[in-house]
Each structure stands twice: as structure tokens, then as C-alpha cells.
Length: 401
Ligand SMILES: *Cc1c(COP(=O)(O)O)cnc(C)c1O
Image 1 (tube, rainbow, N blue to C red):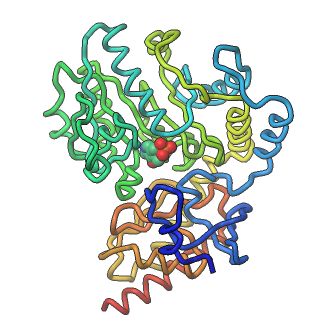
Image 2 (tube, protein in one colour):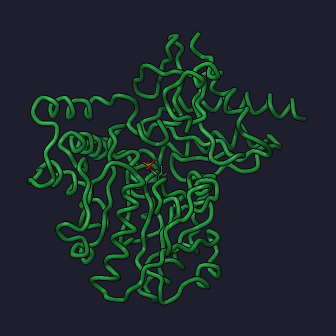
Image 3 (cartoon, rainbow, N blue to C red):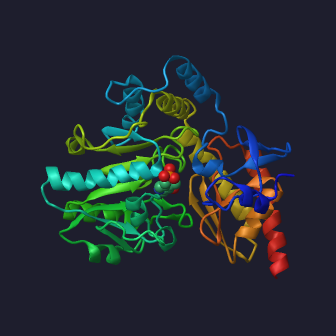
């Protein structure tokens, strides 16, 4: 057995940045994964909201295969028609008018922060630079995005951090109002704080944020890296609240597993990112764009956002029905197919036990079990997953007493 993680990490040539689960996955198809011993798993984490169309989706594979045969990489010093096509698919379905393609969520957020500052400094000429973010948020691991992140553990040991960020409690209108000054250039937030414990924004807070941005001339940046592209039952989660962000970012589900991110913004922000202001070698290569186009076309053809809105009510109803009586289940919450089960106690052992029983789920903070199934998940798969969750939670609750 190569499951001996201690032995593996001793000999590993990798940085030990991850506490890895003792499972080695070698094959995937739809909502199923298989490990090196041929054991089958039901995937309810989707590579952390990445493989939203399931593993190896046919339409995306066809687009990628076609592109692999003709051209892999072109410098952004040339026109790349696939980028225009992918950007059109995104802007036609959102409030945005312009897209910058990059390679990850952190890069997309980094671009968003840079764009907000540059707009205020070079176009609006206000000189403002400060970005307000929220406790428990997660925005990435680069120096600027970890500074924006509202969790101390991701900042530990990396000082000095960049200047110009303020962090306040989430869903707290007074706290937000209190830190707005003539230095504030933007408010940056998630619609569902995913890594922070699956905490959705309240309707009152969403409305207050929009009003404060309008009153004080602040840019609204929404981090949709985990919630975007259908995950919550809308194309983008901010639509649930009628928000029209000046800037928003997507990444995880955008390429069905191919690494790609995007920053999207309103028309009037375009000139703030003129030639030479920002860039990335790999952003928007023909291969990445084939993955994006294949992914978005599939979402459109299969009406994935509508499907998610429907099937997620079934998942929530099943969870409430089967877990509702468990006294240790403190809350079941989420939006679309990002769902958190808050447990009265540590979730780690239960997650390991679910893996043992063939269901892959992930935590969101110490006490929350997070479900991120494929957006094409079936009722049968939901029934199977909920049965395992119910059993493991019942056993654990009985043991703990
Ligand atoms: C995952 C995530 C990021 C970071 O994305 P990377 O691709 O890992 O850089 C940023 N924001 C949110 C909300 C995320 O879930």
C-alpha cells in the first residue's frame, strides 16, 4: 500500500504545504473517482468547486482535443480570437463589458485590486487606494490577496504586508460604514464566504454595500472565484441580490479543471488598464480558451444555472430531512450547490470517515462539512451521498454522546 502518508512525506521532493488525505486518485468520470487500488468514490468536492461539469466532460474534452491539434500558445502580443469568443460568452451573460484572462483565482483578485487602485489614481484622480474586505473571507495566497483575506492563519509569517487594506466583520453594516474614509477606493467581498465556513451574505448587507458604494463613489469588487459560473444557481452569485459589481472575478469552475481565471469589469474601467499596465504570459492561451469555451457552451446548452437552482432544493430538502433530528447538527446552509453542514464539534474525523465510506467531501473551517458536488449531480447520487453523511454523523454523535 502506498497509503503511508508519513513515509511518503519523509521522502517527498515536494514542499509540505498540504496536509494530504491518504488517497491517491487516478481516474475520474462524471461524479465518480477511482483510486490507485480501483476503489470508487462519489465526488462531492469537485476538486474544490473546479470540476463543475464532472470529471472529463465530453464537450470540453472535444474542444481541447481540437485545439491541441492546431496551436497551444500564442503571446498576448498577437490577437487571439478564442479570447474574444470566450470573453463575449461571459460579458453577454453578466453586467461586465471587459475581461482580462489569467491563470488562477488569486491572480484574478490581484488584477481586480490593481484595477481599482489604478482607476482611482489615474482616471478618477482621487488618489484613493484603500480596499475594505471582511473577516473570514478568502481571496488568495499572493501578498496582496492574502492581505485582503480576513483570516490570520494565511498571513502568519509573511510580514510586512502591503498597505491599504481594512478588514471588518461580515454582514455588519455599522462596522463597514465606520471604516469608509476619503482613502477608500473599493469594497471587496464574497457572496458566500466559502473557505470561511459557507456563510452567505444577508440581503440587507448586500443592499447596504451597494448603497454605500454609490454614496461614497467606491468600486464594488465581488470575488466569485468559488461561487461563479453556475455554482449557486445563477450564472454569478451576485445576481441573487440584484448587485451589479464594477469588478468581479471567476476562476475555479471556469475551465472544468484547466487552470484559468478571469477578471471582469464595467466599460468605464477599461481605460484604467491600457497597454503595458498589466499582463501575464499564460493568460488566455488558445488551449485555456478552448477549455473556457467548451465549459461555457455546455453551461448554456444544458441550462446549468437553472438546473442547479432546481437540484439544490432537492439536496437541501434531503439534508434537512435526514439530519434535522441530529442534535449535533447546528445548521445546514448555502446557496445552490455550495452547502455547509455546521457540526457541534470538529468536522475533521467525520470527513475522514466519509472518505473511508466512499464519499469525498471537504471542510470549510474547523466545524463545517462542505458539499460541492458536480453541477450535473443526479438525485441518485444525492441520495447515496446523504445516506453516507447521515450514517457517519449518527455514528459520531452516538460515540461522542
Ligand atoms: C480558491 C479561491 C481563491 C484563490 O484561488 P486560487 O486559484 O487558488 O488562487 C480566491 N477566492 C476565493 C473565494 C476562492 O474560493
